[in-house]
Amino acid sequence: MPKKRILPYIILGIINDRPGVTGREITTEFNTEIGDFWKASHSQIYPELSRMNADGWVAASTSKDNAKEKYYSLTDEGKRVLEEWLDQLVDTLPIHEDMFSLKMYFINDRKDKRVKELIDQQTALLQKQLAYLKQRQQLVFPNPSSIDAHFGHYLILSRGISRTEGQLDWLATIKKDIQ
Amino acid sequence: MPKKRILPYIILGIINDRPGVTGREITTEFNTEIGDFWKASHSQIYPELSRMNADGWVAASTSKDNAKEKYYSLTDEGKRVLEEWLDQLVDTLPIHEDMFSLKMYFINDRKDKRVKELIDQQTALLQKQLAYLKQRQQLVFPNPSSIDAHFGHYLILSRGISRTEGQLDWLATIKKDIQ
DNA sequence: TGAATCATGTAACCGGTTACATGATTTT
DNA sequence: AAAATCATGTAACCGGTTACATGATTCA
Image 1 (cartoon, rainbow over the protein chains, first blue to last red):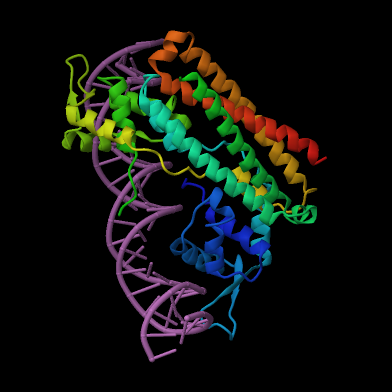
Image 2 (image 1 turned 180 degrees about the horizontal axis):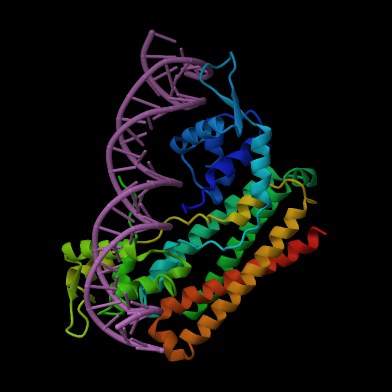
């Protein structure tokens, strides 16, 4: 049994939210909104769109304004497949492929100066990340009605903020312990 | 520039901690200790060990007791390479490839019943994970001296517990909001 | 009109997974 | 002696990345 593919479902979800998107716009979505929890490059997306088109999940149209652009929308079948995917419960937790943990794991001595270095660096990275996420929250969800329009997106963004704050708190507490 | 390989450094770290380990023992390490933040299967590890041996990072020896087993230790060069890797600061945060976020992201309606379903399922998974991590903490670090012997491992384990608790807290608060 | 970037596509490569395979050792 | 599992290895496949490539559109 081959490994379960996720990418096509993400693309279905994006097209569902923004009918008429182009492949390029889908690509940029992976560098902004979805980029926090999934990555995909254009060289992966274009062939995937072709495949989904061939499978009848999406329909492509063109315009006279721009010869190269293709505008994608979901077919009924595509909508069905997306809903079917969303209906399936998530039954496993992800692993955290994370360099900080990995390196820290192999440092045995409490007084190794790299313990402090790793903590400081990680703190700086997370502070930057936190500022970015908060700025995004203000930008994308300036008022209650924008929250209601994309509630799930709002949830996972606030979750990201909460998680980042939690990690910063943890780093702050252990920083006291190691001195 | 090809993507940076991590696996060989993890293997170096494992062998450094437990000189004389076999490939099989390294494999099991990925299912227990390191399994929380990195995965590797034996069919990846054995060729990697051969390569590292050919590169002079590790030395293999055999015993009369068991014809097939190979016991690995670090060469001076291997130790140097490991230290060099540990010295390099971590300058990027990982992304969280996570099905919960992904599906939630595409659910726009606050009242969609899948919001609650996803939250409940995620809560159950995290509770199980938390119990497992706490049990591991008790098992691996029963006393202060065991902490001092593997301080980094202790840190990332307690970080995992803190993160899991944080996520459970977050789930509990938003569960109130959606009703 | 030249430069930048928009927009899509292909090809080579690589890390990792699953499946296949084999013999040694230990347990029943 | 048979069964289980220990221990190592190989091969096929696949998802994803980087690099290569090309033409259209927009901007200066």
